[in-house]
Image 1 (cartoon, rainbow, N blue to C red):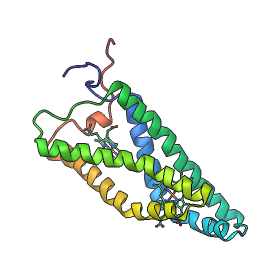
Image 2: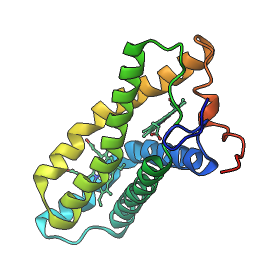
Image 3: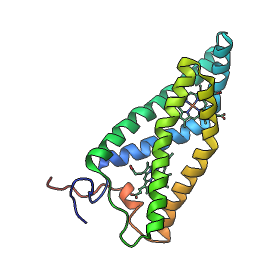
Length: 173
Ligand code: HEM
Ligand code: HEM
C-alpha cells in the first residue's frame, strides 16, 4: 500500500485514540441524555433547576462539547493526512455503504453538539427536537457500523478492525 498524501498505510495513534474517545463519549451521551431534561425544562420555564439536576445537565453539556472539540481535531487530521483505503478485494457497493456510514457518523458528531448547544444556550426548542429525534437514528447507524466492523474482522477476515486498534508502523515521512 502506498503512503502518499491522503492514502496512508493506516491510522495514526492519535486518530485511533480520537476514534475510541469519541465513541465512548457518544455512547455515554446516549445513555445519560435524558438526565439533562429536568434542568432544561426548569430553565425553559424560567425556574431555578435543582442542584442535582444542574449537575447532571452540566455533565451532558461538557461531555457533548468535548465530542465537538475532538471531532474538529479528528476531521482536521483526516483532511490533512487522509485515511487508509478500503481493502482492495472489497466490493464497490460495500465501499460506498462504508463511506456513506462514516459520513453520517461525522454528521452526528458535529450535528449533535451543535443542535444541543443551540437548544441549551439559545433556548431554541426546535433544535432540541431535532437533537432528540436523532437519538434512535444514531443508535441504528452506530449499531450497523459496529456490526460491520465485527463482520469485517470475523467473517471477511480483513484488517479493517485491527487498523482501528493498532497504529500503522512508524514511517520515515
Ligand atoms: C459512537 C460510536 C462511533 C462513532 C461516532 C464512530 C465513528 C467512526 C468514523 C467517522 C469512522 C471513519 C474513519 C474516519 O474518518 O476517521 C470510523 C471508522 C471505524 N470504526 Fe467507528 N465509530 C464508532 C464506534 C465504533 C465501534 C463500537 C466500533 C467497533 C466495534 C468501530 C469500529 C470502527 C472501525 C474498525 C473503523 C475503521 C474503518 C476503516 O478503516 O475503513 N467504531 N468510525
Ligand atoms: C455527541 C453529543 C451528544 C449526544 C450524542 C447527545 C445525546 C442526547 C440524548 C440521547 C438526549 C435525550 C433525548 C431523548 O430523551 O429523547 C439529549 C438531550 C439533550 N441534549 Fe444532548 N447530546 C449531545 C450533546 C449535547 C450538547 C453539547 C448539549 C448542550 C450544549 C446538549 C443538550 C441537550 C439538551 C438541551 C437536551 C434536551 C432536549 C429536549 O428535551 O428538548 N447535548 N442529548
